[in-house]
Length: 337
Image 1 (cartoon, one colour):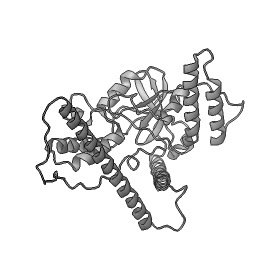
Image 2 (tube, one colour):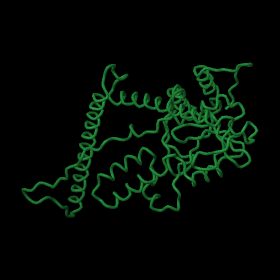
Image 3 (tube, one colour):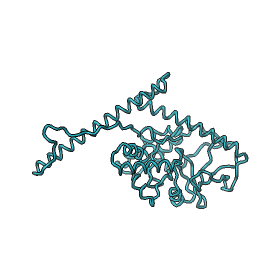
Image 4 (cartoon, helix red, strand yellow):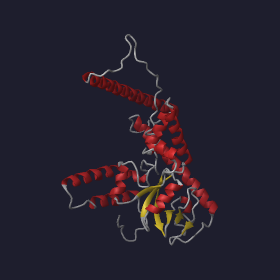
């Protein structure tokens, strides 16, 4: 990515930066490509432009736990591809933990949350056990980084490579210098710390060493001020995440925005009604699909001269009462700031 800013420009607004990035995507369009490749690129470019404005608030990405470059492919990920910016994460399952590997499988984060909810409602002890193991994995890796993931990051990121690192629902600028990973320091608590530029990423606990622009150790001059600034940043991040969640809730209900004056209780009732409606629709579709499958099997068996099981005369097939399944797809998405 090579975006040139005007000479002597020390401050740039988010709107200006979005314009520069949009111009770069348009100018970076390959020249000598086939018609099919051109149409595919133009579609990707259109998808990326539609979500580019979200860079100012937060992008929604969905990690998979099998590799440091593995994400569910979404328009948000297309932005990084078109800008040629590598995107990494370190939320990996250790392949030596066979029970966790089996429970998590190839699920993305959203899929894993849905699987946990489904397993909790299952009467199958094996599925219930997998759900428990998967839930324990998410709880024990709440910082979204594992030591296996850190090792994979260290070996995968190239020396001097400038890239983006996803962790704790945040994007960070990351670079590898002399075989060590560093994250760009951006918390507002460091505004007055001119010499503090990078923080080393060498463990999952988040207590790295602060360095200057030359990667020389440079402890903060006032650790207490830095701590307060970090706490303020966390509070701001929470408020932003809450705002994004409310926008998503409004979208779930088909609103352009949450009506003024609506109470939290009324909003919760509306959301619950929407979830119940979706759950009812989901199970109706499942039952219809199962009934259609039974009909196909019966028809195939009859045409082949085979026998098929059927209910006893005058007796209806037994049914199991199912509890409505709460949809977690939207609520459990990672909201990025």
